[in-house]
Image 1 (cartoon, helix red, strand yellow):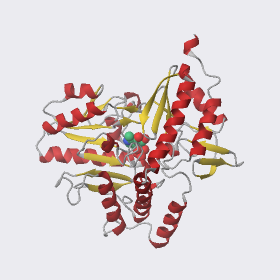
Image 2 (tube, rainbow, N blue to C red):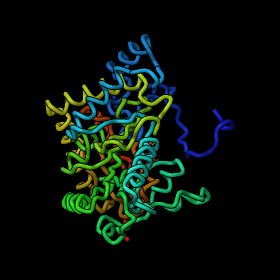
Image 3 (cartoon, protein in one colour):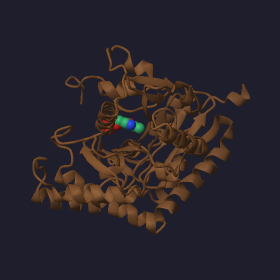
Image 4 (cartoon, rainbow, N blue to C red):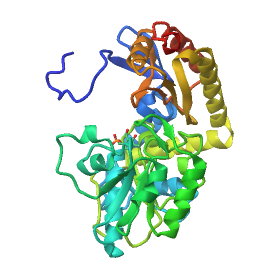
Length: 394
Ligand SMILES: Cc1ncc(COP(=O)(O)O)c(C=O)c1O
């Protein structure tokens, strides 16, 4: 179908998927594609998970939406579960509908904190190649100037550090917070060094500067732990979640344990925390918690990483290295011209992968992907690289 009624903001692939099952997607002719993308980390349980379908149906029969002017029991249960799984016991949640909204809430929260603590001309430090969303403020927080071109003026409170090390050079008396992804998702599956992050977290705590971790892509077991912050063994002041939390339904969360910042009337959302999305999120979390506790999640991570290792070792002439943690993984190409080629060839072989940055093939499979789906996917990837440029042979 033509796109005459849509703004052309997405570079769309000309395949219309009709339905999905697990980590397979099917087009109109029932051609099967192996999905290593899970809707960019959203379909955490894969497609058409029976328990997600059942929960949607059951809840839709009772209540889909209820205004936040009423007390919503399942919203409270969902918040309790998220806080319990995070291990940061004193945190509270604010529900919204997307990653950008969760980060927007975090930035509002930081501003109010600055106001209460009389930090004038407050600045938030973010890092080059970060990605925090597309609203005007989260776009400004996103330290990628090419994405901002034409959309100014912006709120002028973000300072960009080159990398983690550079943060300390940027800190001054106006710094109120540092906001970052522990593994940059859009910016090249760039997993920061654990020791460096732990040192940074300590320094910020000493200087009473807030640490806000954007876990929109890394959260909800993507890295093998519930939060990447758990993996890095730090305790942020603010955390945001979205993508994989409700298995495909729109949801976002901003959480913090700083009290008395968000007070009555300070923030809100019409759809945020509605009974349908929070009920499904609760089910998704229950399923994933069980898989984590029974080490099944760890097994899936191991199998995927083992197959990725094999693929990398066999085809080292094309790749610089493997990147990422858990099931948020990438392969860095030696020749960035090969990125679109791999992507397109993979499509021809009916495998869905993602791009990240200029030269990374990104993998964000469902957290429930089966061994046979993983193996089938890597067989397809092997066939997809035959026509690549080989820098080593130049
Ligand atoms: C780390 C991170 N933050 C924020 C966002 C924005 O999320 P959304 O597209 O749901 O607004 C994304 C989306 O890719 C992301 O990866």
